[in-house]
Length: 124
Ligand SMILES: [Zn+2]
Image (cartoon, rainbow, N blue to C red; front, side, top):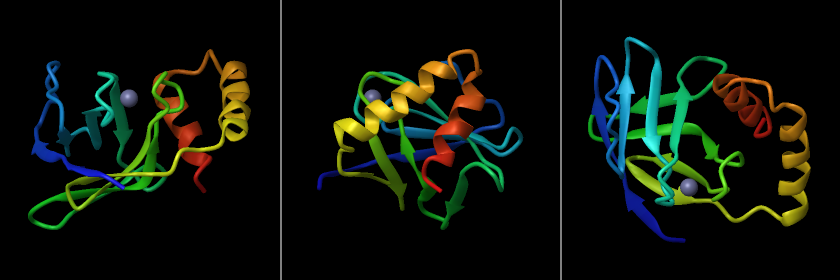
């Protein structure tokens, strides 16, 4: 399983222009954002809270849990950020993805934050 490095950037206000292979973390807003690790260019927002993602900073690198599943994007990438590296998850079966997509269609109206909460619930 291939891995690649992702560098963290602590910021008060997260910039509009995001670079690849970097995760921007705002402690003021309890949010991290990065460009999808597959290179598709989509921006992935991960709110940090007890009910969303957990950010671990060990002094050198960051980890996020749970995993990041970009089912709402065409790439459908699924990976972990662990100790500053992207670790790819195995691809989900077509059946499982279709099941999730069906659920997503019914939830088209929900906003981005809501969608991420919904996605996260799938991993519990
Ligand atoms: Zn992607």
